[in-house]
Image 1 (cartoon, rainbow, N blue to C red):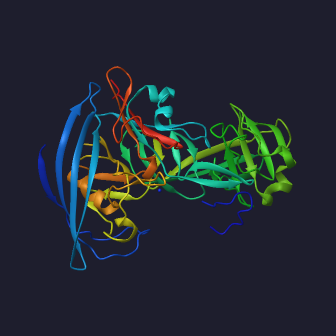
Image 2: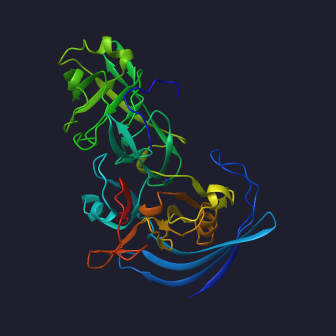
Length: 404
């Protein structure tokens, strides 16, 4: 992206069965080219329980075998799968942008109280904004059909479209701000970067700038009900976005024009989702790479893809029922980091063995957390004992009961 990014700078993802996976035919565009390999997956079910809300919880011991350069290789891990009841749908849960909380804390939200199961969400980075580290999800997100966070380019998400169908493509933003005869193209919403030629929208989703500063425009319009109620410059920019308002933040290119806007004049903001398939998303959370696509694995066995880590994966089976896969790993090292688990390609082959036809990576490592609601209304932690530490994360994915 050929822009001078001056306002913010980034500095910082007891029944046994044997399944033979097909050859890996290629690699994604962001993976190093690697020779195809064939993996053999052995799955031993340890236990299975179905909760009153319809969520099925299974625990497995798995082993993955393959050969690289004529050398036999293997990985073993404990795996937990949750299968959602038919028609259960995922929802994005997030505190205000820039605020972190563990999964149990996020489940205390109104959406969380409706949930039947949940997992941790998107990868997150610490971005430097005005010399302050602000932790934000890496990718876009959508809730109730409205963008929460979208950047200047499409990013990977997983969720549902407005018809409730599963979606795991990419989404960006397109839109305009019309003021008299002038029309400005919007290039982001609640994003951590504002360029010299940028026009960014900030909503009440980014509320508290005391703990999580946002990029400040050279000039900012405060808009309420399609009218400009304030024009800010200098040290008045970058302030908290109040309820029922939006901020239009402009880069240097537009400063001379937009700072002359009159209070009370119209500023019509129109933003739309720009998805890879053209559908409108109802709920979506940022994700990592695709692990299983139409029942096939397209990842190399070695390199970073081979690294054993605790992991969180979500997707669905051939009937469109949502499922999750959690790899808790083998414990913690001397520095407190979670260790063990599987490589990405290895986990992808396990996902196919357990019935996924589509599966995508969410954040893993210390973020790995999965929970299911008990009959008494409290939650069981799936991946680890509930007494163990949960890393604070920026968002999560919960499933709610099927609509009646």
